[in-house]
Image (cartoon, rainbow, N blue to C red; front, top):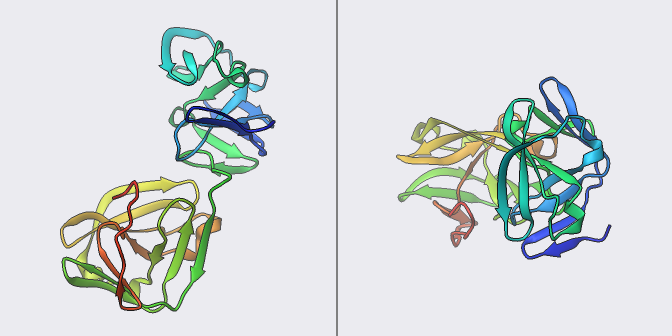
Length: 242
């Protein structure tokens, strides 16, 4: 199908087989999923009703979207409001499809690989490149990292990130926190506070395959620290993390 756009919503056919598990069994399995961008940052999956293996009974609740119309909500295997559909949507392509709430499900698979957080955006690319550029990071005027062997991660829509060897980082200035985040392209990150600034640095111990080159390296929020590249102070980028 040709991509469809209505307001902020964009829809196109997914190329991957997609499966959803709940309660120890596959409740949806399709090669005809729709990728629907309901927000600008990433898509979600909508499944053809014929590829859904659980009975969907309306629970009496609804939700309204200005672009997608009135949604009917469903409980799924005891999970409240775990699915929705837009049977009378002004977007015809959505009318016979179902969306499952990501966090309400036990697991999601694209082909035979488990995916996390949200579907991978086919227009997002992650490149990790070794570099010999000199990167120095300051926090409140104190140098907390100084490296001539960074790996630079380029991710569509985000500023480049400088991942630095721990041997080039002042680990004595870093304090572990309980924060952990997950990324569908990189994996699960652990965080440190730096000089009293919470969650300013992070690392992926066991990143996903496409980002394995950053394993064990440390990155900082360039939006919140001073970064010098080849002795030139970089402008702090503007992003959703600013």
